[in-house]
Structure formats: C-alpha cells, structure tokens
Image (cartoon, rainbow, N blue to C red):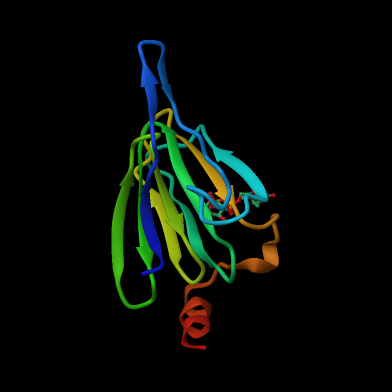
Length: 132
Ligand code: T46
C-alpha cells in the first residue's frame, strides 16, 4: 500500500496552535500545487480514481471524512479528522472519499501541476495499469 499517515509537529501555546508544512521536509516531495475541497455533503462521494505519478498529502483542516485506499489487491479505510495529521498517497493507489462531515475542509498538497492525463478514472484500467 503506497500511503502513510504523517504526524505533523504542532507548535502550541496559550494563543493557539500552528503547523508548518515544508516541501522535502515533513512533506516528502516538492510542493507544486495546493488545492482545497469544501462545501461537501455526507451523501456525496468523491475521488474514485488513481494517479500515475502524482504524490499528495491531504489534511482535514476542519471536520472529517473517510478515505478508502485500494492498491488493486487490498482495501483499507482511513479517517482524516485532525489538522495535524497528513495522509500521504503515492502513485498507483485508487482512492475514494466518503462520509464527509458538514463543514469538512480538505487541503491537498500535490507534487505536480494539474494534468487530467495523469488520472486513471476507470477501475478496470487501474487494475491493468498496476500489473505493468
Ligand atoms: C485527489 C483527490 C483527493 C482542476 O482543474 N485542477 C485541480 O488541481 C484539481 C485537483 C481539479 N481540477 C478540476 C477537475 C474537475 O473538473 O476540478 C474538478 C473536480 O476534480 P475531481 O473530480 O478530480 O475532484 P475529486 O475531489 O474527486 O479529487 C480530487 C483530486 O482531483 C484528486 O487528485 O486525489 O481530490
């Protein structure tokens, strides 16, 4: 399974908390793109694709959602519900996102610019691709 949870160092004092994300330090790649997902609904699912080469770290800045991660052989579920934990997902992993809480906000750090050709959005094609 090409994913892992990253515990971010939290700088906290009586004023609140701060987490710093740095490329090639606590984020294991050069950060080329940041996007965020919000106004999600509990009954809506997202994702349902894999990436050929893209690496990403996903942080639930607020609220919670569940990721289903699938390497073509095994499926595992991960809840993201803390702003100090990042979910790293490497290439060759099918992901689905579901059970979004109201107000869930996901921030995603990505290793490449957006490129739709980099997506595998058909599950049978994903299974073929990971055989190679
Ligand atoms: C992923 C999960 C966690 C862009 O134009 N630029 C971008 O950088 C992105 C990420 C998306 N888009 C467009 C492509 C679609 O027309 O935004 C629309 C929604 O994207 P998508 O349906 O791929 O969104 P999700 O939430 O299913 O998946 C996204 C990322 O695309 C994907 O890489 O791993 O979040």
